View 1 (cartoon, rainbow, N blue to C red):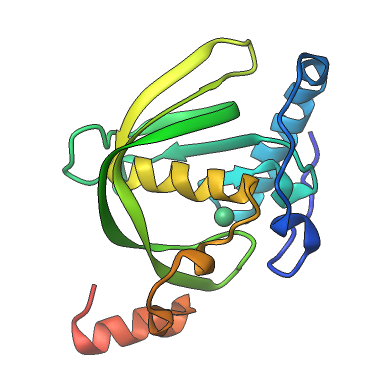
View 2 (cartoon, rainbow, N blue to C red; view 1 turned 90 degrees about the vertical axis):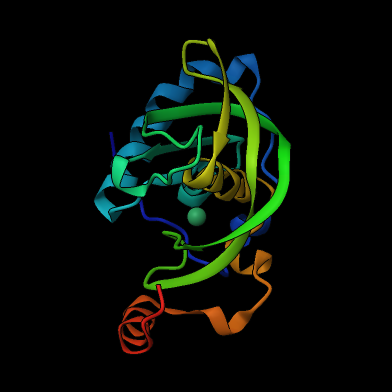
Length: 180
Ligand code: NI
């Protein structure tokens, strides 16, 4: 297990479409996932995609703490989840705005539209199929992490770039104007 540096926006690998994992890759994945977990924890994140530590493969990890969940059904706390070759579909195309940060854009956050309700699937490290319906923050973090596999960072999803900036400034502004 190694804490690896996290690539930041501007690095070429973050703009690439990551390749699907094959059966031959499986033996190397526990080590890679251990590195991802250690790197994410060291940086204080709640989700990470393999390209962020320099591996352009379709693998994401994330967790949803109780503090992040919303009142929506299917937005429950989720323990550490590993998804190999994740795929998904939209169940409710309504888009909700929510603040996001990213370990590849340290110190920044932005308000991003995401689909309200989705269904996703992927395999864990044992090859077991994981299939879940997700809404709210759970749906948001999945969409954020999977975007990394397609070379997309959250600012590319934003519609109002006035809602993008440094976390410290945004929190100070929110306190001033009573915004969320
Ligand atoms: Ni990210």
